[in-house]
Length: 194
Image (cartoon, rainbow, N blue to C red; front, top):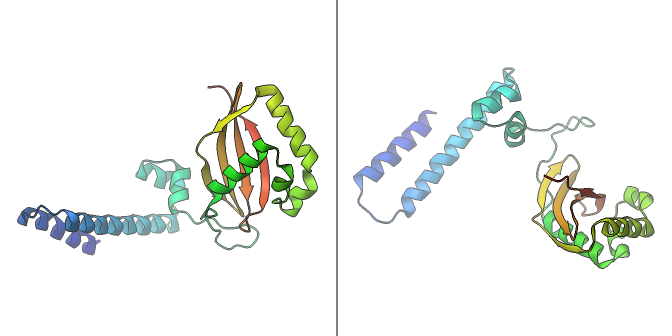
């Protein structure tokens, strides 16, 4: 903490003592201070947790929910192995989800099912996928477009949620991808009216 204070004092004094119009160096130093402060917060949160503070206490101190505090500073443990789980989403998952949606809208059932992992392949055939999409479009009309995909890591998979707009209804396409880019789950969820 003393090092952070020294950096901050030097930064503030440098801005007062110089008349240079080039703010590049000042911004770079401010980013270094911000990074150091983030390191201090991370360390204090880890110490608080080691001494029994709950995620609720940490979240309250940070001004966020306990879930947000855990997602930022926690290390989820896989209950099957006791190992720390990855919290990094699969790179490109948003684009993969967009491709699945594009294939769904175009009726390319074989292209979608070819990406299924073995469990999905056993549970959802091309015909069943086509029938499910037909039921949705029968209830809500033609596909009009999709919104921005939200991506998050959930255990062994990366889950994508993409808002879908049909003529008479809104849905969310939830696609779960394994790290090998296979599809572990595919759901079209009706969005409740607001």
